[in-house]
Image (tube, rainbow, N blue to C red; front, side):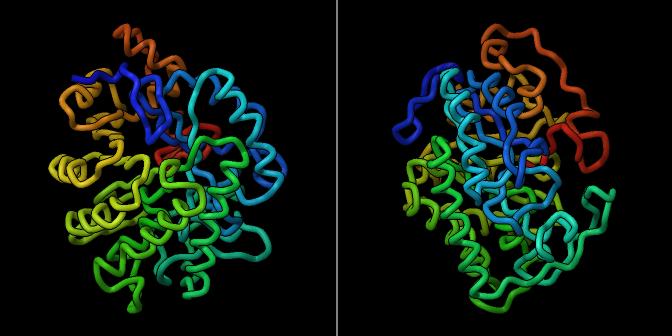
Length: 359
């Protein structure tokens, strides 16, 4: 029987334990051109005892940015600014993957350069608002991606993955969860396309599959993970028939040989039966961010490694309050309690210098 404190081989990369730091948006990329800052190097290095760190969502292109001061991986300036971060984590003995996050329709034109507007699979606006430098703004109707723009977006992900390796990352996680672009293509509400990128399960999974394949071809499948969150309604997502959708998605990505699949369960929408089914369908490392009543993963969830539900457990809020979390988990505590107000950033969407559930 494995425990969360045993090492694990992640597609050829040895991890010291089976405790992952989940991606959490921090909005601290105050450097020129949405580039990382020294504070980010300190922050991630402090948490290098995690078996695996997954960074905050990092946009693969300028139009992929949905929040203020989130970092990118699409310019030379950003690549150079990430290197002190990865160097600091490696010096502390850690392993770090960059999460590639294109927010799609979730965003606002005021957050984008050169007159760009948010994009999506269809011109369907999400209900709700986004935080901007001018305060809360309604989501706008996104520009529907053309066939050529879909191909360009796939290429952007692949290039951002190459940039991540150039910046010293050990790999990348493709963000297919939480209502962002890949998740929008999976949604029966956000994706109203009548071409090969929509209409059916096969059509809706085509874009996430194409992105994952392109990224794996660019840097090697053994350095790529995918995050998904079945039935997650964040950012106005509806997924009719989600069980069939995710079974089909995992079946088509399985032959690619990804390093891991990262499943996020959320609140009342969590479906442990589906989680276990996806676990059986995927032969690589299975990382679970489990649903808990208070949205904070605790000590008890480590038992999910022991009973075989998952290979690794991802912690978010508790890692913010406890940078040395693996040692505290091993000792059974004590734990600093996450501040709920700061965890959600002070408002219902969570946009200040604090983590959010969006990463």
